[in-house]
Image (cartoon, rainbow, N blue to C red; front, side, top):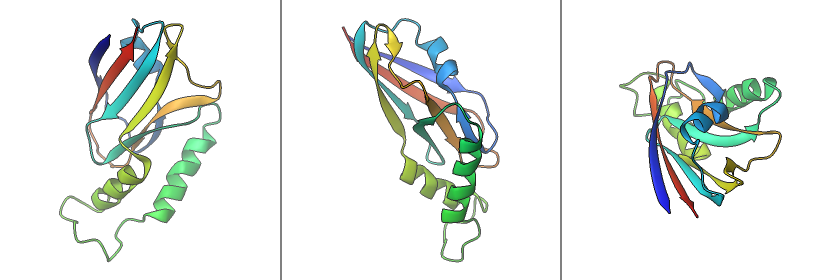
Length: 137
């Protein structure tokens, strides 16, 4: 069995946002076992799996990535869409456009301290679209 669901996320402000609960609303008919592949259809945002309990982890992600890939670096040539655009593309490439998660007992089988993050790198990114492909029995 292979199914696919398009999920439209609301606009989130710049930062790292837990979307696990949001996704579970769209994935209420998961198979007994399988794999869920979650893909974001954007080049200035990313998905990742990380700590879901302490919100300072999300703040630290933002601070570290901004230090690693600063805005207004003179090496950037792609600047027409704003100071946050090229850094957003670089951050997106580093973290990635998808996560793959096992399905067990009709649920996403993530660790107790794990959550799925939308990593919004633009100041005004707008709504984001995900494609979730589920492979299972």
